[in-house]
Image 1 (cartoon, rainbow, N blue to C red):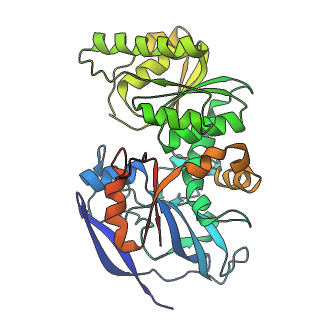
Image 2: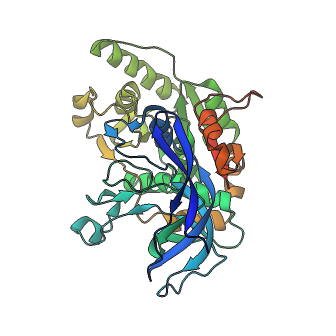
Image 3: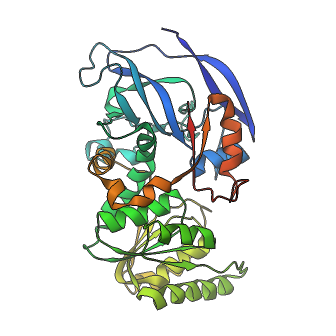
Length: 371
């Protein structure tokens, strides 16, 4: 078995190179996995386009990719729950497992977290856009029969949605508003409907995405947010109230709002659109400094709740997929909108992920690389 693999490596903005790198040795608790399916995420796209993600700078060549599934090719001597040939979804965050947060089950916010494809930790944890990886067995989740490798690649963004829903702690049948009809927003909406039995309205600036969400059953109704760019604080807050009123005309105020864009005006509108005693789930990562109408939240006890990645959500996502989630949420069949095959086509996949529509006029939602 080869100890070297082909890897896609980012050296600068839009500078992806194919090179051969050595695999680390297989320790007793490790699993060697051939990566078969990887979805491209918004954070991957930020790194690709800017060689940074917000205020996180890339400081060494970085392999991207973290929404992945593959096939086990070898296991360490202490691994008993997996065998060569098993399909697995890869949970790519590797926490310390010994700090207070980890011991309380909140390992997603472990200060020592090493997350593949993120430049936050040093040295960087290399991503999954490579032929094979060696990964701890604890973070390799076996996929049951009937759950495909492409489904396995969707487990990661689905885990984000499930984690957000768990932190929201909404009552069954709640009214839910989702800002952003990208992959995570669509999954927050869809999971909210299926798991939380919620009535869901989704809002986005792109009419085609709103239409995609409602026609494919992710949301019950949609709102197209006007393409305005207010500049002053006062103008932004006026616009945010206008958007909240547009939502209110459809369903009144939301019990829970899932903000998946990171856009300041959407977070402002989220506060105005949420009912007293409700919650705003902050999922999108945008400008780290924003102006918010905080009194509109505090005097109505609207809770602002941070959501960062996920913890203890992978198995739940896999169980949902294994137990007929696709039949309950048929839109999942259309979530992957473009596919590219082969490690050599990863640059093309990134080029597509940054577009609104492909050359055939089809909407771009989730771009997947099969290898």
